[in-house]
Length: 328
Picture 1: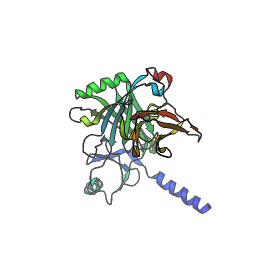
Picture 2 (picture 1 turned 30 degrees about the vertical axis):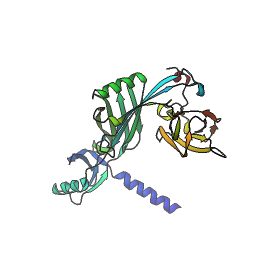
Picture 3 (picture 1 turned 90 degrees about the vertical axis):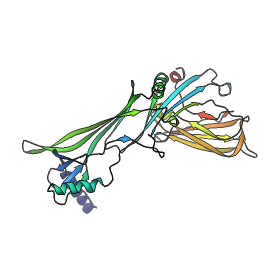
């Protein structure tokens, strides 16, 4: 055990000793590189620029979805009405093909022998998605590889954004800032320093060119017969309604001969707000079905709700809305 500990300490010390010199950099192939403060052949690549991701059909990876709910007597919320809007934007951070080999060749041409490349250390990343006075933001202690961003909008701003998208206007911006770690030679001593790089990306929502990226949905939609699945929506994590909630498990039971057929779907913070339960046989929606919700919390506890009867709903919202949210 003592031998392993000594080896680990030695490796950590060697890694920490290699650090980028923030005063010595080059721009090659549109990539900024910092040289190591001791090893002239070692260079650090800064993270690649972000860009709007592309779907499988090559269209921009954004989506604007509006949802409307009207209460019903069968669910005990007659007269209730609310609208929701979610803007989703996908971000990718690819490097150009063969970029590292081209950078090595450029370094060799400039006199660097046997150049080696590493990724630039990133100590913090800030990501912000802005629309009007709405903002979704978070920070993390490492570089951000990209992914999907979801911004929940108020009904008023949702209507403004929908109209702006119909007119082909740009009103959404993504701001990414990363803090890069290194050292500088100050008074003949190497001292820890930081520098930052940032990008601002405009997201153009074009409803005329990409109509399939925009949806309006009535969650109270009804069908009479032959429906074999139910779309389930859970906005708890998107809206941050309960910081202690880890997962929400939804069970739906439809009547069949002998016993009910039960299907389950689980929502988490890291997953989608929308899911679908498919049943293995057709069902007449004039017959009621039952729903049970189990909430799992981050401390391991869980609460199992009662079975509730629903009828004729092609779409089901299981969000635990606050009273002030329901009154909007």
